[in-house]
Image (cartoon, rainbow, N blue to C red; front, side):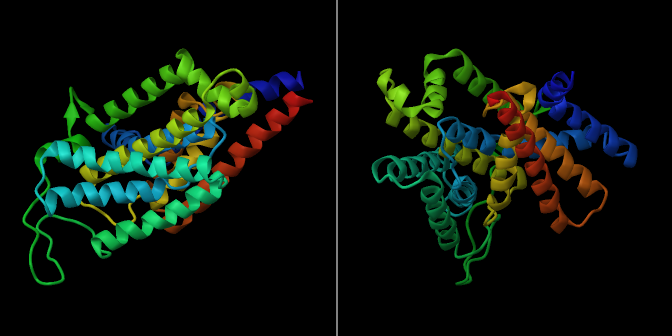
Length: 328
């Protein structure tokens, strides 16, 4: 009986917790459940979810990408600068930051696969490199409409309305960002669960040597995972710039912790016990609801990391206690 209760709580505890938190915040603040606020939550978690999708890919192949936060920051300022400083067309503004994300993923995979540097150390180094690159590129300034440069000149461009529509607009009453998020989650889930390539990701992460002996190109799979992680972070950076209408320096710094928390919370969703896209989405929802509710309750922003840390600890405890019980 006890084991059955524990299994049930592991499978559905996260979903139940999300529901409980929503009800609690709804009772504490009458504005929490209003459509406008719920829309704001969905918009906020869209960016985190894209970052978390990338981290999930790296986790599935038994890796870890710590560089996603600085990749988001670089993609944000590059997309903004291409529009405000250089007045480039929309396709360039979107494509270049995503391509940069892919290149950062390639750099990570090269360091990890070719140079045999442990993934945490390699991606930590890359995180510091591109954190410095994005600050150096903008000289430490955020990018905004007709901004003034230190030499007194003004930037010639402004954010194009079509670009801002991606982050601020709606399609049939649904925010465009939310649509993109749901499509990305669904596509990643289908890829991992119902395609041969997706199964190769899980086999590589489960037992690299067995996967190699089975004929799976293990190194290519690992490289693909890190490239996908970089691409997702690049997309998140573009979405961030289009949502806030500026290219904020260090925009992605807080997103790393939120994305990691979402991924590990997702381990316990529906009893998966492993990284998975549906779980990651529910994890992002939980993080987003908590942060929005705490903001509406007027708690100081500097206390939010405490909540994130506790959520991560609880998720890890639930996951590893369950996995230990299954092994025994």
